[in-house]
Image 1 (tube, rainbow, N blue to C red):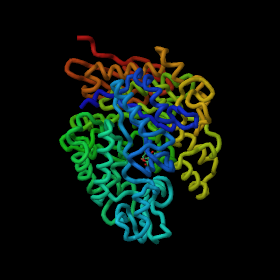
Image 2: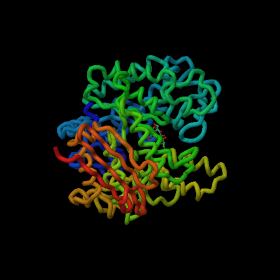
Image 3: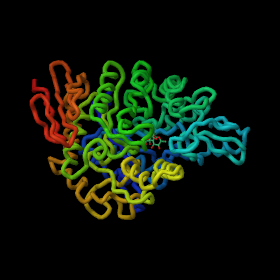
Image 4: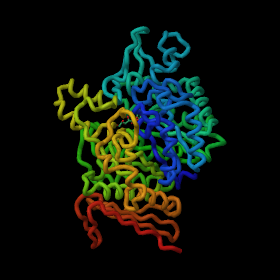
Length: 520
Ligand code: TEU
């Protein structure tokens, strides 16, 4: 299980590096930055979707699975990128989006063409909708004028859900996955994979709860493993994105003996600063944060495996949300967050720009936003009578667009991201926060990440050691011990902007201390 000592770097291709000046990142842009990633020390690159797509949800709405969207390049560009990744001893993982397709995918075009089309049952059609709500606001059902039925879409109406009950659907997906693995891909990040098994009869109720880990989910994932990964899984990495998954369920999904997935993305720690919905904010309590992360550490200590992440393309920037992005604290906060996460038991995921301490962006008006989830929420909330200014203020802190501003490579006009006009404005703080200013600075956030990744590669206690929480009730201090044989690693960090007292010591705001095992 090579991935126990690996670190994954997530690339959001739209915003990473643009090679042709159209203001949208692309594969040749990524290829041009592989030495930067090699220098950081990461082992695996996860690419968010690059397949042909109407881009209604920035590529998570796929209209063709076995090709590359021209905005990102071609299959030849992909093969050249993959070769460059492998030449540098890294691996590449694709994003597998098979809970739904685009409504422009030929499968759905056939399915909606008539009620007796052979692919009608590849999707979910009903004469009457149930009360399920979409993740992107509004009903989860869309009326089809031509055939006078409704189709299910848990996300946007341009993302109809596939019917995994139909074995033809599953076989078509497995064939597509084998096609990519035969092309040299090293695994998959599986989008909302815990939603693919729908509850029989599609009863009314909470669509997230009812669709979370449905009755056949383990059967489907075990079948997928047999049909796609059997015989080659030792080299692969598979991670299932599973909103709402519990520790008990994660133990089943990641138990190697059950041959389902290597790890899951759970959401508990990224939902602590909200009430009923992500738009209903509440202050983050460090004790709650520690308790949640510690529960997952101990919950998968003897079985299964954790993924470790603070942010991704769906979450606000880590240092702005969990840290303090004011200039006097940003660097220390970014380093402290990285320290307490990367030295835990599990596989860390670094989201592009996190290694530079990139922050949320200074959004002006609603016109600045591009994310369908944010725009749909704004429209629905304002239509329901909420004050537009208040809704906008929530978006400023919570919108997924915070993660999607262009990568900050240098201090030039568009941060070295593009020679054209970026699809989303570059954060003006790129003048100070950028890769060029950090790669040669030993005190930079970049080199702090590089050292943490090196520790995971060189110290077995980091990858294999057990986990013992300390200071669980302390309102500011996050501390724990990792042990493996005689090796002991201690981590103590002040996750607040105020000095903190612990065991007769005063830690400065965002100060983190790591005591490494004494050399043998
Ligand atoms: O995200 C699923 C998911 O849980 C998110 O919708 C999340 O709850 C929300 O965005 C938090 O604000 C996956 C992809 O990561 C996301 O980008 C896609 O939009 C979504 O699935 C549909 O494919």
